[in-house]
Image 1 (cartoon, rainbow, N blue to C red):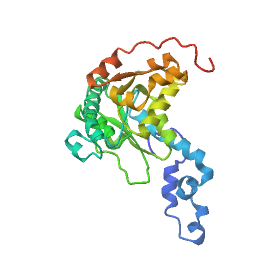
Image 2: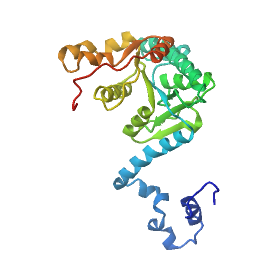
Image 3: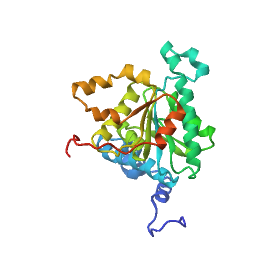
Image 4: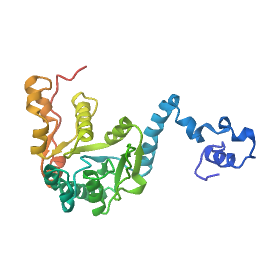
Length: 280
């Protein structure tokens, strides 16, 4: 028995090991005989989706708590943005030009991780999607500073592995996009969004919606690359149409450099008064 266990009951891990050594009979070979929590085929049944959702919420939550992670700095951004030395491999000239944001992401993560180390890597811990491009740059910058960082990967139809700069003990894998996005925001002290595609847009707009509707506290929300974002999204047109309010344009700021982003996070003002939030 593990000395740190408080329960007098036999633990599940012990029974799982014991069950592997039972006599080989038609009964013990039957799927029905497998312990429910050790039966992967059973856990993957459609009827078990609520259980899988709960497990996917709990596992990273418990492991981050065990590592003492109190707050994070979120970095969203495109997987296709290359490191500047590899920009010649980019499929478009625009992607090649956007490679500058790989370096800005790396430097931003380095600067924030230097601050994170002051708290023993408990606060302001960099969290990315754990993949290539901007995500790699974020985890790499944290490693440059000698700190830890989180990677929230997801299983995709094509082969994917976490980048090599994620702290191994904080490298997680997800099946459900929704639960993954929850983990991005549950500890967020600031959110940064670098140029990217559908995935980045999805993450950006969900986070903005949560803040806009009061479902999440206002935190520093920074969009790297004003020229890119003003070309991709006509923010003023949304306000002019009345589909968002003028105040909603104050929920975020544009930045172009890592130092500019750090300065804004440190001097982020209080939330503006809001009277038009639905349900209030």
